[in-house]
Amino acid sequence: MHELSIAMGIVKIAESETRKAGATKVERIELEIGTLAGIEFGALDFVWPVAVRDTVLERAERQVDVIRGQARCMDCDTLFEVAKYYDSCPNCRSNLKAILKGKELRVKALEVV
Image (cartoon, rainbow, N blue to C red):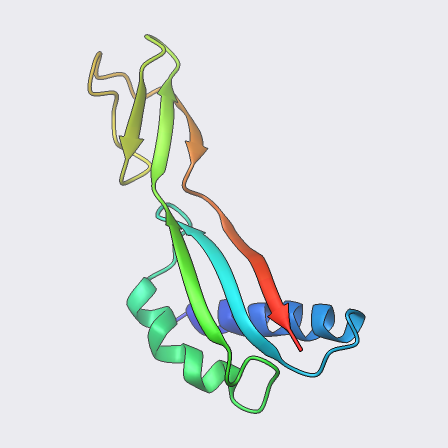
């Protein structure tokens, strides 16, 4: 379950940024996670309380903005939503595509005090 290591990485980022701001805790954290990032949302929810225990994020409100996968077909230039990397173009059935959105995994914002 790599979601625990991802959650621990988020904690490290939050602790570092909180220290830089001269704050002691985080009231709110906003994350952007793409549907193609390989994150199991249920597993992240499961490990989150353990990962944030005794950290600046322990009492923080967590908001997750889910970014849907989007691609552009390299053959016919169609923009389309992708749920999996191997989804083909709905217009021409080509598998050649550029992934434009959906791979995100970032801390978008922290509210610290």
